[in-house]
Image (tube, rainbow, N blue to C red):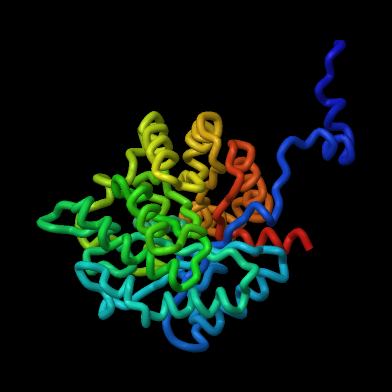
Length: 322
Ligand code: PBG
């Protein structure tokens, strides 16, 4: 036997020398859930270790994460039913707690990168990402609302806006609007290939944002399709996106790779709530080693071609590195 691949695995040093993929805390964005009030920290039942924070406690949490080396955060608000309406009006009320908190966070941590979410669902009485009229999602009318929302977030101090709604033409619409209003420096991380997935349920629990009727299949992509992701990526690139995101991550590693091979923009992947919950639930049962499963999953996402990973594991991973 002349070729013995095992020689390159014979010691920890050699294994480290031949290691192709290295994960860093610098690759990660931590999603955080915000609620109104003071001194509130409420665990999400289906996401052990993940909490909804009131703005004061979120500042403390961000401070703790910054000290661990996490510098990028994606902040999602949870609104009570009483604040929701058909047009997601609360999303662009300058006095709303989400926008006020973004502004406070940005002032407290100017060196942090703060990402916000652009979609109607947390504010919509229909629980959809777009405007619903007679059971239909109205694409172009939704763009108007998303535009107001994105501008309000830019005004509040967002570094990156993340349109997660999957309406056609939204990236171009938002880019033009941001530029026109003087927010040329605000980046857009497009949810380029966002699939109609079963893996979002814990997130919808966290935000009480599940659709009141129907599903999201007329705007989110069919899990059976890969080629369609190329069309979305092409449009987002032409329309001025700065990052292309694939979501979820683990069941879509082929899509991450496809976009990374065909486009030059940095690829992000969203390791979603259900992917987190799966590992946490089996680890809690003693069925697998949660820490190793976490690292292996994150590594696979990076190996597939994602430069950036949005993950609820970011803090745990950073703590492991200390
Ligand atoms: C909605 C949105 C969702 C997520 C991020 N933005 C859920 C959905 O589309 O229903 C899911 C994130 C996760 O599951 O972690 N605009």
